[in-house]
Image (tube, rainbow, N blue to C red; front, side, top):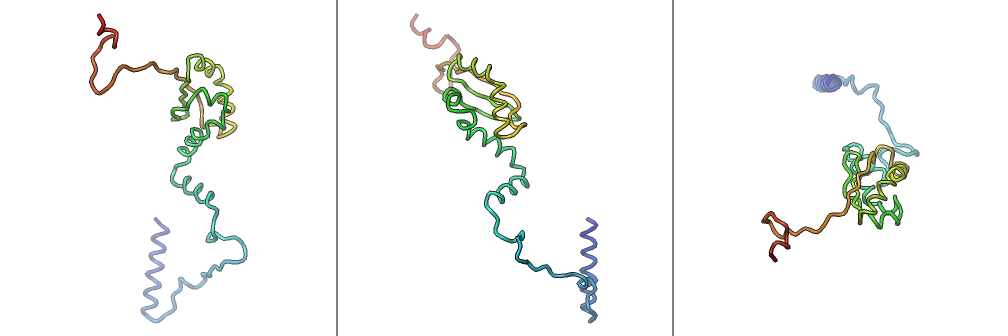
Length: 158
């Protein structure tokens, strides 16, 4: 705020000096910067560097890292594990995986420490802090917005 006030006061002095016919004092001592043969901020930048800078400025980096884990799942954990489980979400450092069977859910729970170590090495230490494994769900007999409590389709035969 103070710098803005000083700049405004300097502009007002320069305008008053120009009206009275004197040379403005604020422009003395300033030197124009010319670009030289070396790299400069005004030079074309690689696209990846620009995207990284924008994502840091806007606070998108955590979301991009989460999306990286979900999109590169096959490469991060390998095809053996990726064929038998699917990542559902990654929020606040908790990765939720859905296994294709209860046996694979148990296997993933035992491999949890190794998976955390592998993910930390690939995308960063604090991206995935814990893993929650969800077993597959059974079939749902609900078809539509309304349903009646009961045993399902078996209660219509008796």
